[in-house]
Length: 363
Ligand code: GN1
Ligand code: MG
Image 1 (spheres, rainbow, N blue to C red):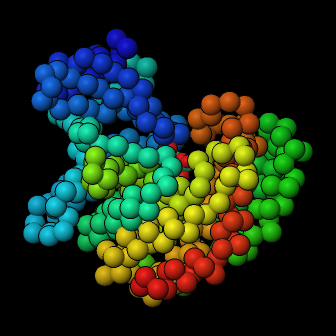
Image 2 (image 1 turned 30 degrees about the vertical axis):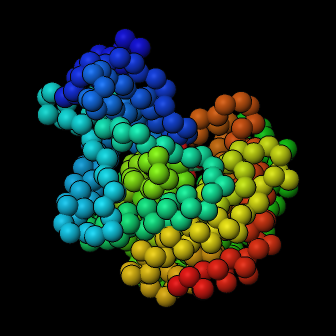
């Protein structure tokens, strides 16, 4: 990892680097944990930014600096119950920038590593779900007074279902990897629900739900916990930009209230866990009921179905496109991920009334 050591050497760090190891399970950027000695110096997370997806790294960096700076300021002000919440920080380079561009055209950045933090790809403990719900509630609350128009829209139309369906249908027609033949049931599954899945987009267009500053990638493993199972931070801030809170709620349920990992092959293991759903909703609403409007609350349960649908749609599209967007660990991985999402969505459909009841009793 000599190249990595050189890169880290360009940042203002403390201590002596002792190891740099692959870290986390993101599908987009490459992340490494950088440890240092002596014991009491900070550790870091080094990331190579996926420049094919995040095309404008200066704008991306500017958004992250603005949001983290704002959140940190609000945390210092008397914020009461948010005592143990931390905001991650971009580390400056010795030249005064916040990323490094190497000779091969790769962009690198460095964050502080939140000491002793843990993240979970999947959970079974409702207390973790409740804490997770609070964490994203707090994030949205702290970000709520950022002027949304002051942020760059880093990935335009990121959760826009009309755009995603358009791309999907185009990819089916183009059939670039010759895989459309094998996935007719999945294509039918998508089309059967396409109309209903425009609900959030329409609510936005009608002005019934406001654009706010949201996280937009609220996978449960983007929440950091301490060893007392308290949520202490949220990470992966690349997609923080104007959005609907429903997207954040739904994606956290998709990943934090499922009985199986995102790519579970045995579909009989994939279900919505209503206890986790209730706990996450309770934690989230404890914070968010202060600022959500009635329509936002009314569609929370729907948003879980929506995000499961749109992420499944994106996995399937990438499968048909020859796996160009998401990292895969084996051939067919994206198709497997899509099938897991569709099974989870079916389970949510079967439990939808219960989910709605849970939300209304927590408001
Ligand atoms: C990607 O970076 P990561 O792995 O947390 C993706 C999300 C998807 C997720 C599915 C920028 O998130 O939108 O929900 O994979 N991020 C981007 O696991 O596309
Ligand atoms: Mg991400």
